[in-house]
Image (cartoon, rainbow, N blue to C red; front, side, top):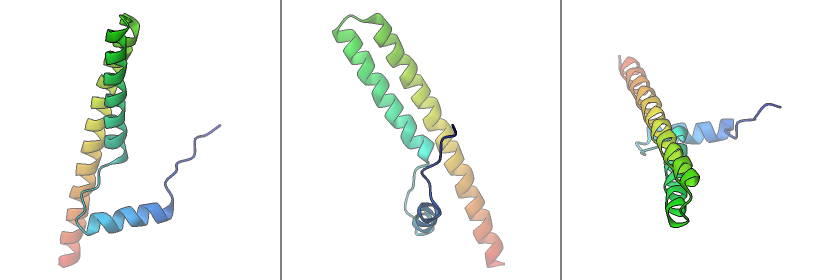
Length: 93
């Protein structure tokens, strides 16, 4: 069973409009990465409180994965912004 993306043409158009207006839009992976980091820190805290080493370890892994995902999202956003800048420069000529 394939996972459908929740992103619709209308959502993409809205995001493009907001980006073109200069609104600081974060990439979806950046947001997911931040959420993963928060989840990891919460697991670590609960694990420390309950002396559950396995839960603490899971939390450390989740936080690391979140940092990586956020970094990937940031890179994707920056590449997209650079491409948009190139496109704007081409249109000006």
